[in-house]
Image (cartoon, rainbow, N blue to C red; front, side, top):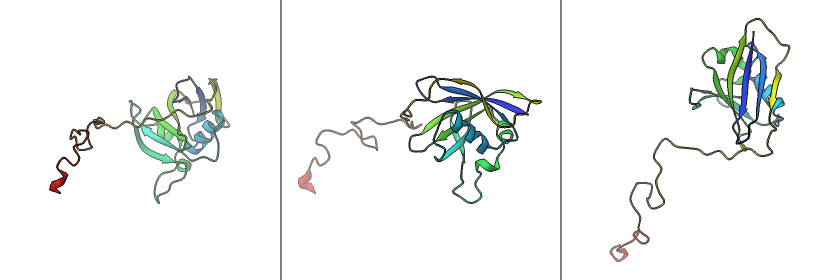
Length: 164
């Protein structure tokens, strides 16, 4: 059985690949297919992340587990992941943060492939990864407030410094 996956680079330019892979292949095999398809550096660390419909990042599945007993790519099949979800995230190179959104396009229960293959390629891989903005669920504070929400005047830190 095979699955066709849309692998879309999180970037302002449209860059994506459709990858066909056997469902009994591992996530490590999928990782290698993505590295090859997008001409990424193969020696960089990477991880898949489970996600919900809004692409919110969930459990990490790294290339190499750093904690004993943690799941890692070589021990998880593509089928194991895509039985419960149709979307996952993939991050390659934790310094530059190449981020990809992966979504199931089609499942073929009869077809088999010898190894993962790119069946559609669109867009040129940019030279630099986009800047990632980390957004908190909490309300941010303005420059005129300190972290506790108190409004700051220009000189109010030590208003009555003689009293100290």
